Image (cartoon, rainbow, N blue to C red):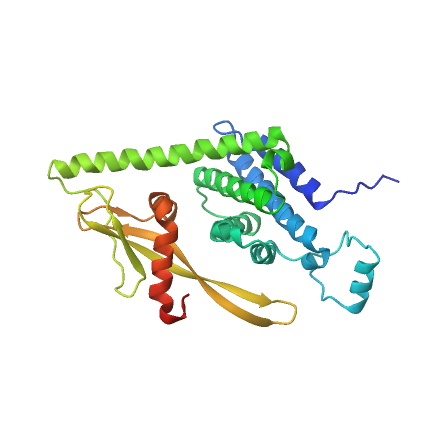
Length: 295
C-alpha cells in the first residue's frame, strides 16, 4: 500500500509556485508551457490565500455549513484536512475582509481567476503573451502583499529565496517593459503632435453618463484628459444561507481620452498611467457615484 503524504496549504502553495515558474521561463516557453504554468501558479495563489484564512480560523475555509458537530471537532483540535473548501472567489472576499489592505488587488485577482476558469473550461483564441505577463505580475504583487500583510514576513521567507527571486524578477521585467513601451509610444505621439499631425489613436465613443475623472494629458500636457471608469460591485454574501449583507462599488479605469486626440483603451495601460493618482481619482469617482452615501 502506498504511503500517504500530508501537505498543508502553505506547503501546497510553495510547491506549486516552484513547479509553475519552471514552466514560465520568459522567452523560452511554448504556448502550452505558458497555459500549464499559469494554471498551476493561480492554483498556488489560491492555496496561499486560503492558508492565511485558515491561519485565522480553519472553519472559515470550509464549504460545508458549520454545525454544532463541526464546532466540537474544532474545539478538539481537528485540522479539517481533505474537506471541501470554498472557491477561490469566496476565499478572496474573505481574505480582503480579514485584511483590508489586500483590497487594492481584488479586481486584479478576480481577473486572473476568470482567466484560469477560461483556461480550465473553455477553448478558443488566447493572447498567450498577455496571459504570461498578466498572471505573473498580478500573482507576484498579491503574493508580496499577502506575505507582508498577513504573515508579517518577506516573501522570500515564506516561499523560499529561489522561488521568490524568480517570480519577482519576472514581474519586474514585465512591468519595466510595459512602462517603457507606453512611455515610448507617448514620446512618439508628442513628436507627431508638435509637427501638427493627427494622432493615430483609435477613436473612443463613450456615453455621457459613464463615470469619469480628469487628469493632465501626458501627450499634449495642456488639456485635461478624461479617465473613464466601469463600476464593479463587491457583493458581501453568505453563500451557505443565501443572505446578502451589502454591496460596495469598485471603480475600474478602462479608457482615457483627450481633446488632442490621445486615447487609451486597455485597462492595464490606463492603470499604469494613473500610478500614484489612483487613490485620489478613485475617491472622486466614488464621491460622484455615491453622493452623500460616500464617507
